[in-house]
Amino acid sequence: MPRGPDPQISESKILHEFVVSPDPAFVPKEIGERLGVTTEGARHQMDNLVDRGLLAKKTPGKRTVLYWITEKGREHYARAAE
Picture 1 (cartoon, rainbow, N blue to C red):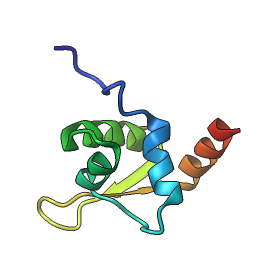
Picture 2: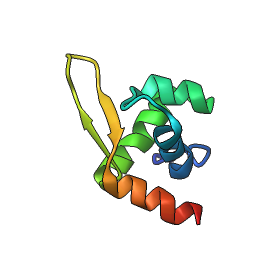
Picture 3: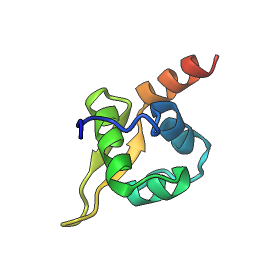
Picture 4: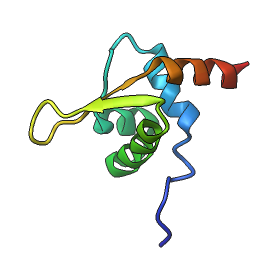
């Protein structure tokens, strides 16, 4: 099976969840549930967005990783939505 982002998990769908939600940050499980995809698939795509500077992340606990949208991510989303 090829590795890489799941094509069902588009970056615009992930960024949309961050833009429309009043919550400032998410864990991959929450995004996976909102989009109907696996936690691992969501995490993989979210890490790709971190690498591109569209999301940021931090690890406040041993197994918890929080992600939030960056200003660059908001601008990217707004341009894509035009």
